[in-house]
Image (cartoon, rainbow, N blue to C red; front, side):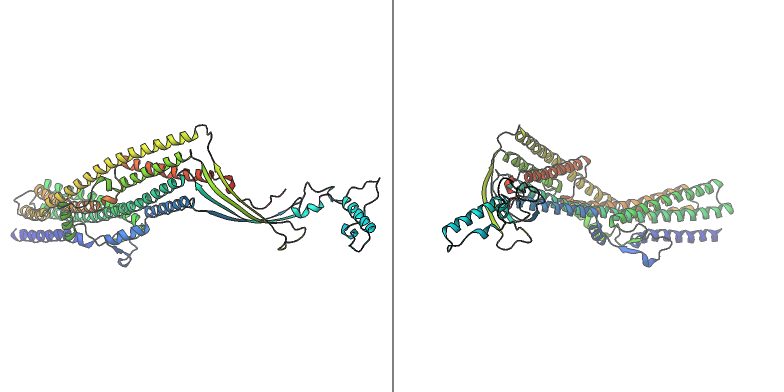
Amino acid sequence: MSSTKNQYRGRSAARTIVFAAAIAIAPTAGAQIATSGQSASQVRAISLDEAVRTAEAQSEAIRIARAGVQRAQGQQYQARSQRLPQLNGSASYTRTLASQFDIGGESEPVVDPTKSAPPPTPCDQYLRDATATTTERLAGLEDASRCALGQNPFSSFGNLGFGAKNQYNAGLAFSQSLFSGGRISAQNAVANSGRRSAEIELTAQRAQLRLDVTQAYFDAALADRLVALAESSAVQTESVLRQTQLARTVGNVSEFELLRAQVSSANQRPIVIQRQSDREVAYLRLKQLLNFPLENAIQLTTVVDDPAATNAAAEAAAAITTDTAAVDRATVRQASEAIDAQRGLLRVAKSQRFPTLALTSQYGKVAFPLTGLPGSGDFRTNWTVALGTQIPLFTGGRIKGDQLVAEANVREAQARYDQLREFASLDSRVTINNLLQARAAWQASLGTAEQANRAYSIAEVRYKEGISTQLELNDARILLEQAVANRALAARNLQVARVKLALLPDLPLQSTGATQAQAQSQASTQQQSQQSTQQAAQQQPQAQQQQTGIPPQ
């Protein structure tokens, strides 16, 4: 019996050492989730910093935010272009198939049977020079006149464009807005506010992505720790079951103790399965953020309870230096830019009451060759300069309605700003409270895991010696599991809370109501800015359109 007890003691000590070693090795071993067809060389090791860099390079949210910045930059160019002169060129060729100046389809003269036939063309041949007599010169003029009257009466206007078969136009159109009642400067202010808001959104998306990756990374590391803990507990309960079966065989324990050991071992297996499933989900979430193939295996190299990182996080919680003012939050700054944009749109609405003044100029070259391409001497010049104005005399109340809508939008933007500032103040307080809570939980867990491990070793020895029951041993094991899990969870919460506090000024608000208010404010401002740009394009005076040369008749 003494040798059996010694054997039990040796096995118990060995199992306790293995259990403690498994818990100690788990945080430094990292995670390796691989399929049966993947080798160790195919597992990619990744640290937290590398994960953040990879996520920023692959994130769809970052790409969307960058597209928003590019869109805002384009709107700036659109608004700025209205200050500058506009110069456009044009060129055209027109072929006339039928004209009102044609007579009889073939342009042949009408023959009067009561009169003699006119002399044949060309009519210039009947004109006499100065050496001819007066009678000859008069007769030549009469013949030339009869020849001309017998031809198409509009034929002499062919080189002026009336009924010309060929028409060539080339020209330039110039326009410059001189006065718009403040509309152009207001639209530029709206575009600048949109650009600043888009850049704030890009910074906020980067901060949110960094926080999401940090949470997913430490969730996966925590899941690794919990799986290792559950598997170690399963090994321990299985070992107790084998020991109890052996003791039952020699008659040292009752059937009740054997049944209790069997139930404890069976109950541990579903816990292991659940922990493994949770770990798989955590890794899938991390791979999705990193844009990795879901079937690939990764290994985490940054441990969840790294002493240097956790101590730095605890010190950060003890002396909070991050600026948590509500007005400095990214969402609140965007709301402030939305107010500026709405005020600019209000100025645009008011500017419709003022007249507009624009300078335009048209310069064109026109040619009407009878056949073929025009020569250099065939082109004629058209050049005009105009100073035009437009004055709204009666619009049926449209301008008043636009102004009322713009004023309502300004008041709405101001109310949303106050609402988001309150949400930001609350979110900052919650973030600080979470960090202090995580720091307190971390400090409370110091040394608890070592004490629980020591208590389990003593309980196991007491159980082997018959001093305590299996119930006491199970309680000690459960306390050890809770202590290790609480320690890992406290480390995870402390790390995430520290990162969130550091990123707080650039993070978007987490509250559902604040998120909806922010989205509605951004959508309303962007839509109204685009409508203002479209209206400005539609209000361009007709004199600025490209019209060069003589239009075809």
